[in-house]
Image 1: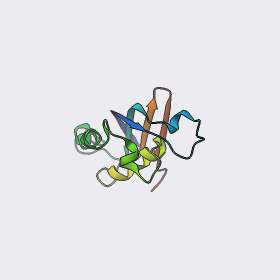
Image 2: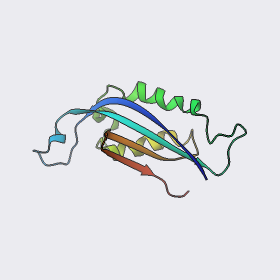
Image 3: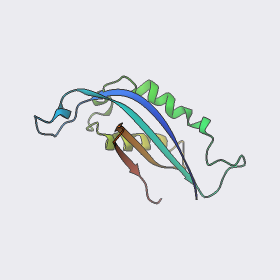
Length: 121
């Protein structure tokens, strides 16, 4: 099995619901997000790639136009804009274009990340 990954970044704000009122994440705050997409394939294409990284540019375009410097509460409603929900949302958006996609990781800080991964299809 071959696998590749590519990272994208953006800055956005959110506030999380369903937490205790004194929790700091209930207040509007921002992150410098890093999104990593993971693709895998048992076979390489004729060029010797799982996928040409240049084809993944549409992910960057989506992130730049729909997520960067936005309030994720406005974009993801009614979902709580957690890293976990964001990873799943991005997976669902890009899976049709990239059948080899099997996981999306969203990191809010250098020390934290959430991964939505499909184990088998």
